[in-house]
Image 1 (tube, rainbow, N blue to C red):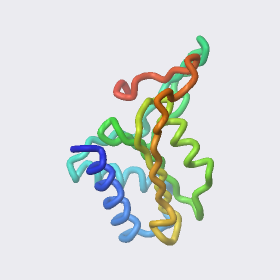
Image 2 (cartoon, rainbow, N blue to C red; image 1 turned 60 degrees about the vertical axis):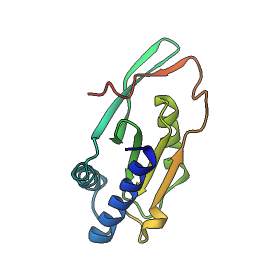
Image 3 (cartoon, rainbow, N blue to C red; image 1 turned 30 degrees about the horizontal axis):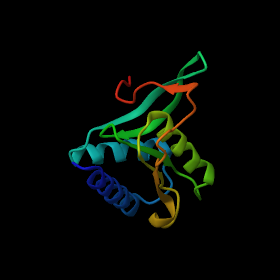
Length: 142
């Protein structure tokens, strides 16, 4: 499946969850539900993928965790808050740059309208991060 088709399935599935459940659950609940629904639609989904980084020789295990990794190509950060903050998008962009992936989403199930809670993000930089900062390969998660 091409990446645009994967992204379409992600948006459609998240929309249906928001419509059916609404807001009020913990992020972890939406994370598990979205993972299960995406898997039922035939996508490979990993949850809480640990990423190690190395900065100038200093190794940090589990420096961050990706909420959902879809098809080893799309990062999803789940929120359940009244509004999405700019820092949430910056977080996902950083994850994309560190892992050299191109597509990501912040999906906030806490907003009254779905359109206000979803943000698609693209890493369009050819050189993602400083040469002294490296992340483990995304496909080698726990």
